[in-house]
Length: 398
Image 1 (spheres, rainbow, N blue to C red):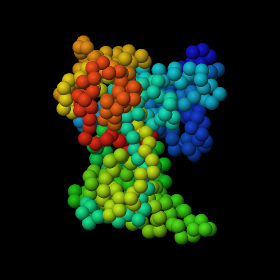
Image 2: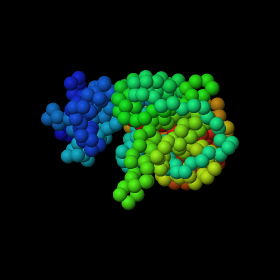
Image 3: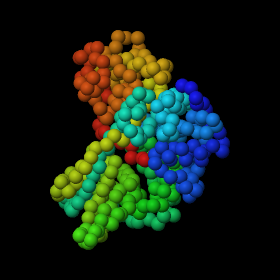
Image 4: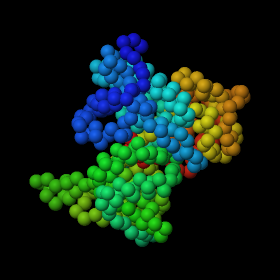
């Protein structure tokens, strides 16, 4: 690694770093965009790669908490990374990621998460695909008589929504593994961009407001199809239970002059199809990777999550980037702790991350060659230990 310097960003270097990140993502950074994003892009927790005093790469994070199986929320770091197109494949990304991971671990973050722009990049840094989502297209939706009835739904103005939605999300809590807290550094941008550019509807149940949805419409009419109507695209939808979820979906399905509702990034177990008289009215148009996870403190992460029933299993982890994680861990239905016992399974941080939130089962990854199986009898026990009642889901863009 020669010809560049990796160091923390200094005050006054934020915009140049943000413009560089924008170019790597093919986004033009205007004065207006920077004004809207400046508060959410502080120098703290950001590293730059510099050549001749000019930034050629940037990596950053902001602190949050992420829910893990069992209900605990662990300190986590999330954000993005980018390298200027004329400086790629020179070791800059590797150096930035190493600096960022070490910094997050030093700060006490137990987990690091990101949304991967390319799925081939982050495995070599210990990140694994830890949750997935599905894209739904809803047409001609009619609800079954026995579907949850729901409550009332009201539309909010922008100012009211910018005050209510952050509070409502916080009150609803992290009720599913993979969900993250939305700190003020996230809302400082999302209030304007996410809420300000969408219609906002709130569901009210017997105990008060218990769900919200952000959506926008796109006119689909053409010269050949002048009566086609609009497509309604859901950007952010959260509800505390089935009744609130059903109430919001009913509202969306009944918006006038809408031909279809598009809902990308929904959880894999979204109950909407089962609520409809015709389940085919809700089509799955794709399944995507969603959250990529990196365990920064393996002992703390394993000790924090809940485990299913099963005989004890010893997993040996080898972590070249964060050697403190390397070791053997005995997992039981009651917890996990370091051990010197012989390993039943061996793996690295990427595969462990794929298992951690319950999105995958060990036997499937072993069949794919992702786990080294020392004791074949341990696979069935590991499947039971890692299993979760519901699949993980993040539901927050960043």
